[in-house]
Amino acid sequence: MRRKRNNRILAAMRLAKERKRLAGPQPEYPAELPTDRPLRRIVVEDIHRGTHVIECWAGPRIDQFRATVDGQAWRPAIGWHRICRGLAKAYAPYGRMEP
Image (tube, rainbow, N blue to C red; front, top):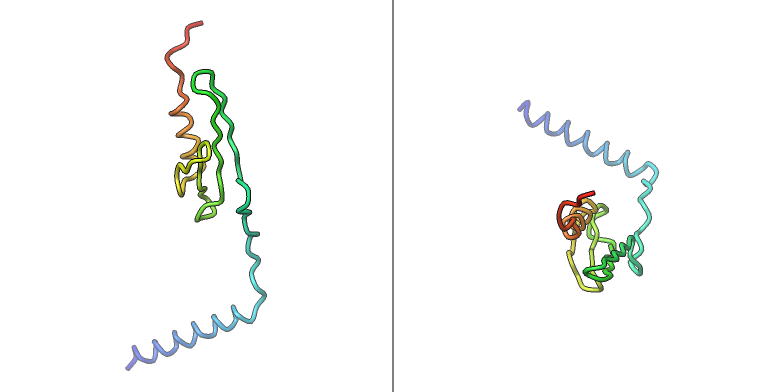
């Protein structure tokens, strides 16, 4: 019996909270990201491998990009840190440089 009463009280509290939320001002959402142009563009000029362009388009989440390399899809969803880490691996020094 007590459990039923508590459930009714909690349901009424949830309903009142939802009504208050709906009656208040609408939250401000961030602006939509542009889809007609890349958000970031990285141009890598390498003597040995030539020039490559990495473009970061708006991805499925706010913290992810859809990355393309030279116009070809690289990853459908990748974070900025992983893009930078991939560049560091791809363009690592060719060995130890002696002064």
